[in-house]
Image 1 (cartoon, helix red, strand yellow):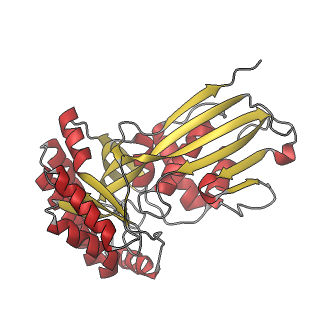
Image 2 (image 1 turned 30 degrees about the vertical axis):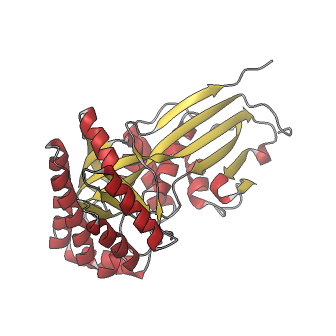
Length: 352
């Protein structure tokens, strides 16, 4: 492929991240069946694929991992050696060899924030690659493909709710009836309720990337031994139903209670799932009259916390100011509710 050639066309895709996953942990293989409430938000993961005729096929695929400052040619003989999730997704989708392409991946959401960023990246990447293959995957199929790559191809622990939220966007009630098979029920709200929920929500990044740990392995082992209908898993499932019903009733107090109940249930699984940093953020949120808080994702060190504030905006701003002043690592991540999930479109290139 010649230096700086003009692409035939560009494929763009975006997918939202996820916050406030009440009922998380129940969308896993060891839970068997589950119920999860979650909210898709921007900032989103963004993928752009510049497509060229297949010239030098040994340089057929280039990855530009923009957040990491890494641009490299994918060597098919090296088995997913730099960014395995990206390379495994590209390998899985089998783009026809008539194309050469460069994939650029970017997200404004911090890596390791426990907001499903890796799922959003994978959903956006699969959606864009799907544009180059025969046929089209449904949103559900994109989500399952993303989850399958994490679990089957890479051997990682992964539920299904992150991928489904990124694919569908919006506010969702997810029922997993037989792992990983699940239905998605979007929660549609009047504009005023949507806008008010968006105004009240705050996402606080704790400044450290969340990583799987021995604590998570202990929790998984304990839940596996207890079985799919254990008290701990049922307590988490209930918070998803409570959250769904609260929004249908436009009851923010009830939604806040469901968030707190879920975080308490996480503590019951293991006290270290709510870290000392998260506890400090929760303490400040409580002092400012917040209605609820949820440690995002599975919990543990690092990650982020979702806060549901009260009726007065300047109190929310004061809360954010105190949180960010408490520790230099704490950071407010501006968020907006996503009315859409995965979006894919073709940007045609005008030639002379």
